[in-house]
Amino acid sequence: MSTNYSLLFYLKKPKNYVSGPKSIYMRITVDGIPKEVSTGRECYPSKWNSKANRVKGTTEAVKTLNSYLDTLVTKISTIHTAMTAAAEEITAESIKLKYQGKDTKCKNFLDVFREHNMQMEALLGNGFKPNTLKGYKTSLLHVCEYLEKEFRLADIDTRKIDHAFVTGYEFFLRATIGCSAVSAAKYMKHLRKIIKVCIAHRWITDDPFAFYKIKVKAKEKEFLTDAELRRIEEKNFKIPRLAHVRDIFVFCCYTGLSYADVKKLKWIDISEGVDGKLWIFTSREKTETSSNIPLLPKALEIIERYRDYPPCIAKDMVLPVLSNQKMNSYLKEIADVCEITKELTFHKSRHTFATSVTLANSVPIETVSKMLGHTDIKTTQHYAKLLDNRVAIDMEKLERTIENKTAPTGHAKIAALWAT
Image (cartoon, rainbow, N blue to C red; front, side, top):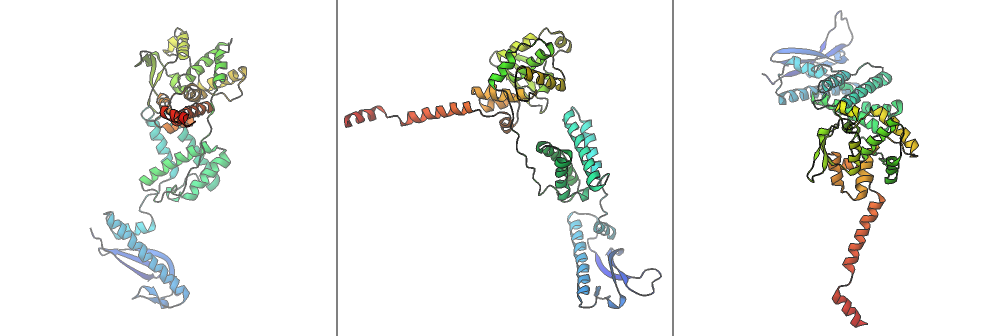
């Protein structure tokens, strides 16, 4: 394989030429095989120096044209060096294609996005969850709408995606779609993943996210106070559906289980733990990490209440969990009846467990994180808010410690008495 090449510029006479300027062409030769490509510039034959392959003269226009030809020499040299370093086959044709940008087939971005989603769909249950796929499908729709409204395009060449495209897409999500900062950040994360796929395949050479940073302030997580939780627990509901939803919600307030995890909970997941008491041994639906939770008396009381409940027996489930939509709808009714002004959603039970039930009662955050099935304690910190009463208790302990250290010893007391 030859690694040498030669390069020259010449004037090419067009068909039916009579007079006037001729096109300047560039001839690349490897192993005696030439390939020609137009430079896009012209020159009068009388001003062309065939020995120097340059234009004669010292005017500003001549200097600019010769400088442009020098730039092409540098570009071809850079292409040749890169191909040599990559051990690619060097021919006049391959250098020409590299120069013209035709060496790589055009890859459309939405095609890459669709291929990604199809692969994810094929792997559902084997590393991916339906909700994850749903999110990526929504992202694809947003990108399609962005291209149509902002660029009047049905798709875009991956090589044309740059920093402006990325920042423009975030603005589109927030201004046109009306996404919150958190939702926009999620969709930007999806876009970034597809961009990384393109970079890995070398369909994109420069990372358009290189100078982009997602800035999202974590939203304050709401939870029920101990008094609000007791109000819901003690309320007597005459409507069975509200009573069932209340029981399941309270159960999750004392176990920290999410909707997906309590919905799939079976009696086989409950067994004796290291302390001889009943525990829940399960894995989180979302992250597939283990979550082992000792059952508190109130949680035990609720599941025993439904042990012989026909719908639970028929489905081999611990609790009669309805659809997430119905659960949240009925929880709003429960909040109204119990005079709770906070927006009551099912996921608030998980925040309540992390904060009011555990941390407020001096359970270490590491233990809370383990029971919630979190892989990173920072995630638990988003769920669990440190309450003022915990701060007061900890500062009281510190105050007692300081007092004990500064209190006078027996000898010091005697010395003080003699001094008086």
